[in-house]
Length: 212
Ligand SMILES: Nc1ncnc2c1ncn2[C@@H]1O[C@H](COP(=O)(O)OP(=O)(O)O)[C@@H](O)[C@H]1O
Ligand SMILES: [Mg+2]
Image (cartoon, rainbow, N blue to C red):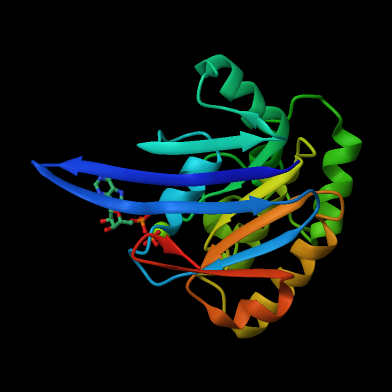
């Protein structure tokens, strides 16, 4: 899918103070493209991911999916777009501690295609799918979150600092897995780690809510 942000501004109001987390951000993520936004802490990365996934409201501007405006969609329509088209990897990864790896990955699977789920775990290199999140290292937790995001064959993956907890070699391996497993899928990663740059086709910089 193509995902476009057109002059998107997000202002948070808190305790009578307003704060622009994003300022007139314009960005186009094309079909099957591999995109990175680098920005320091507080620059608006998580806000941008939450907005791109239609989970957060915007103050002004427009978000287009495949050229169609999304501002007038109902919550139900947005839910279906998220469920069918978007795979989200959250900054604090969203694994349920009382479900094992396989159960975490298949929890939101629309079809009950066990073969596909097994193949996906294989492709991502998750061998111990009966372990619980607190029994596996950060790298495996992060790969579980990736499999979770891919389970419904999304057309776009949105990932918020997916390598934040990984060391240098794990980061490189994670990036090659991400690239391999998203061949027919657009990807947007936000991160503060510039060692990711070499893996991406399109790189943007976010600072104080402004994208360059
Ligand atoms: N729910 C919120 N209410 C008020 N301010 C927020 C909220 N979420 C984020 N912010 C502020 O918006 C700015 C951008 O935050 P965020 O998107 O989390 O940036 P990043 O992910 O790059 O660290 C920060 O100044 C943060 O304090
Ligand atoms: Mg963040």
